Length: 564
Image 1 (cartoon, rainbow, N blue to C red):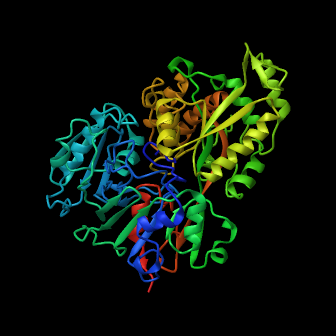
Image 2 (image 1 turned 180 degrees about the vertical axis):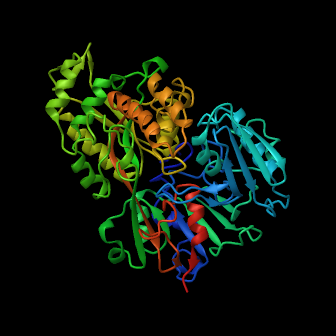
Image 3 (image 1 turned 45 degrees about the vertical axis):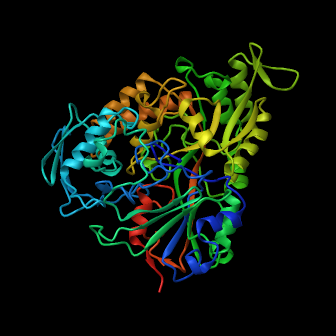
């Protein structure tokens, strides 16, 4: 995600290498308060997603390299809040209903909506989008297999060969609807570059430069033009530059670590912050030799040894300012989804303190012996692994450096390799890595099924050299695949039947650890409350408040108003 985590297209971008702060801010059009960068009454919100490198000019919401537009330009049918339980919010859809056995979904679409090129939006655009996704494996990363048909101008029926209850939040909340009259001309919707996006959303594309672009309010938006007239997305040189810009009042919304996060109102006057524990920070491993993965990390014993060698308390303190929390080895987050964490796991939570004797015992039982350098080795191959991380992601860089020192005590060598986001993302997708640090994001609704399906289902992976999305670890397990398939067909109200499948999935994941759990990441965002009102809060968490998360960002923009 990017993502954090793009996960399944949800991006977790945290840092960038563009240039010095003053140059970047000038190029972004926010060097002074008079032009909307920090002025209290300005009509432009400056957003920093942590963009790594120059923006690539592409607003195709189905491309792995898109830079935005989901929710803001291209809308879903409904908005699902992943941060807490709440009813889905109507966007292009106004109502939906499943039949009793979950094989048919009826959707009512909004009347009176127009695309930004003036043409009428109809249910036919929804059916076209759904069927386009079904036909294209690259963009169909959840295995959607429905058949959609527009009954009339405002009604769509989606039929499935088998119960598909859990498809609902994905297709209703994460399928961004595109205009048939434009997209039917594209030979490959996954690779087509979209520079003039036509959408129905609250914003449309204004100007674009490699270091910044602007979304402007859609005056013809069906819900009325948003109160925030412009959103300016900028690129900086990493987390420190973002913190400097925040300190200077030149960024209005960013998601990522800043010094003094424990007291943002004091350290950054006019700003507030919010931390939401949601995504699972992990060391991703290319784990499957059958799909072409190579290296020591393909051995489950090595993955488990690293898991037990980590001092998570120290990592949390040094890298994440104690904003992260405990994590479960079964792939279910223990905060929001505590009730789903399996009681059949050998460990309910990953140890926060290192267990070196257990780590070394696992390695020795698997046939590893220490060499003259103090490293474990097997068949002449030392336990020396490379961890890829994005340049500028200072918290992750600190985390990797800290973990390298920790696992060294267990006879394992980790070497960090910093890359641009584009290089890192390409390596992640293609499987050209031993380890990399990223996060497992949580899908379209507050339910553990989605993250488990995204990252652990065999249908979402590929051989090394081909794009996996988003099962980047190349994990394949027949028991997990079967349990996920069964879970998809069970009504969410049948908690006992669902938990039986969740138990199978979690216990199998714990045995393999294809993504080595580090911590449940606390996603921390800072925003300018002196300039805009209506931000999410702990008491009113109406959206997941991460600037890089779509369509959550659009939901926030729709709530904001310039401060008087």
